[in-house]
Image 1 (cartoon, helix red, strand yellow):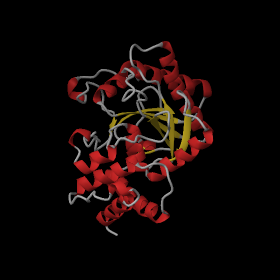
Image 2 (cartoon, helix red, strand yellow):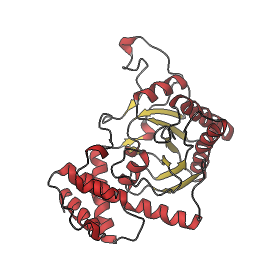
Image 3 (cartoon, one colour):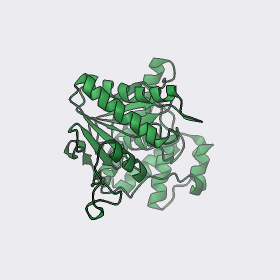
Length: 302
């Protein structure tokens, strides 16, 4: 099968699962097809699926992964003051590391909103249907929603990393409380401890709780850096920690916290600091297309 034929096959297979999709037609445009496939994956419940479909899906997602490019986390340069720490701006789903961290929700099943731009949605979309199936089994065995500040480990399936560490951060609706700070620190500690227990040599953290959960960026970064450095010092852990940022504002915050010195403008990048590792495709960000969705995708939200 060609890549296009794989995409059409997967769309047809997922549409056939639900009679309510009977009148949805497959668009001719490649991007519209990709959006429809991702949307169908986003809304699909964790229920059994044919191994043949998963085989085609894996081939399709792995080619998509290779087209985006892969960054080896072990080759990224360390920060100036600590060889165990890395600051990297880019798409965490393209990172080859032993573990990446997903900012999950209490259900631990991924984001069900079609084409949503949250990291939970993107990780599940690119990992594949198996991730939600695995998480569904895991949560059924647990028997209750995931508490804030803990962590779970799963395979990464079609991502270039080995494992995904899922953690639920605090949601902020007003002023940040002491408990919120403690909960966020617990997210970082739980992920680090789980990574060490599973013999991970590298872990990449997203900016937990700063997206849909609205934790202010500066205090969140301060908690992240302080918790990670304290853990590494106390545990004497031999693990490389990658602080992954996407936005330029977060990059500047982490540069200040991690001791990047000010330099002359002609020697610096546009942030005013020495250059840090950036993804070569940093400009190609995932966006939430909900406001401009075609009708066949809007219907999947019902």
